[in-house]
Amino acid sequence: MEYVTAVPHPRTDAAESAEPAASSPNGRRSLAVALLCGAAGAAIALLASRQEWCSGVAAVAGGKLPLTAKGSDVTGVPAALAIVGLAALVAVFAVRKVGRVLVALLLALSGAGAVAAAVLGAGDSAALDEKAGQAAGDASATIHALSNTAWPYVSAVGGALILIAGILAVVYGAAWPSMGGRYERSGAPKSRRKAVDPERPEELWKALDRGEDPTGA
Image (cartoon, rainbow, N blue to C red; front, side, top):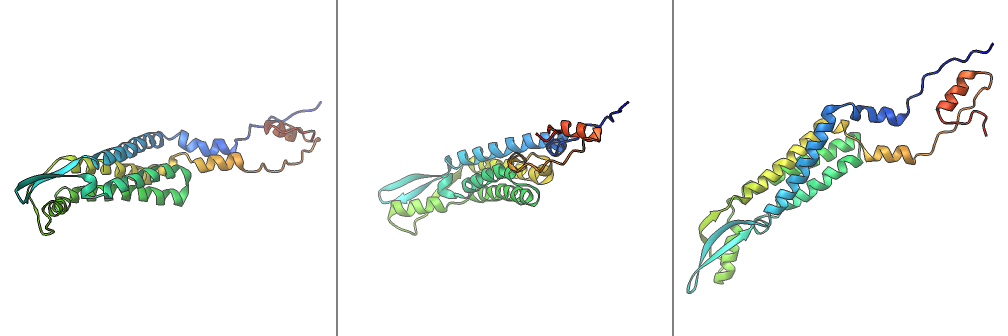
C-alpha cells in the first residue's frame, strides 16, 4: 500500500514580503497620516503663496500710494519646496531601503525649509520697497505703515505638515508598501522548474502546490 506524505503549502515570496506591512497597524496608520499631511501641507503652502502677505504705503509725487505684496512676491521658497516635498512623497513608494530613507529625509528637509522661509518672509518688506521704488521712480524709496497678514504663518503650517510627513516616512517608511518591489516580482522572469522525481509522492504534491505540471508536459 502506497502512502503519501502530506506537505504544507509553501509560502510565496509575495506573501512573505507583504506580511510585515499588512500585519503592522503602525505602518498602515503612519502611511495614511503621512499621505494626508504631505498632500494637505503642499496644498496649503501653494495656496498661501498666492495670497496677500503684507501691505504698506509709499510716498510718491502727489501723495501716497498703497501697495500690497503676495507671498510669491515676498519669497518663492515655500511654494517651490512644497512641490519638491510632494514629489518626494510620491517617490518614497518607488524606492526601498537606503533610497527610501534618503527620499524621506528630502521630504522632511523640504518641510523644514518651507517653515523657515515662510516665517522669515513674514516680516520682510523688500518686495514692497521694490514696488515703492518703481512707483516713485526712486530706487531708495521705502514703504511706510507696513502691516502683515496671517498668510505667512498659514504657509508655515503647510510646511510643518510636510515636515511631519517626512518624519513619519523616516521612522515608519520601512513598513510601507513599495511599487518597485511589486513590479519586480511581477516582471521578473520565472525561475526554472525543479525536476520532479515520480518515485517520490511528496515531490509530486509540492509541484502541484506550486502550480506546476509534475508530468513535465
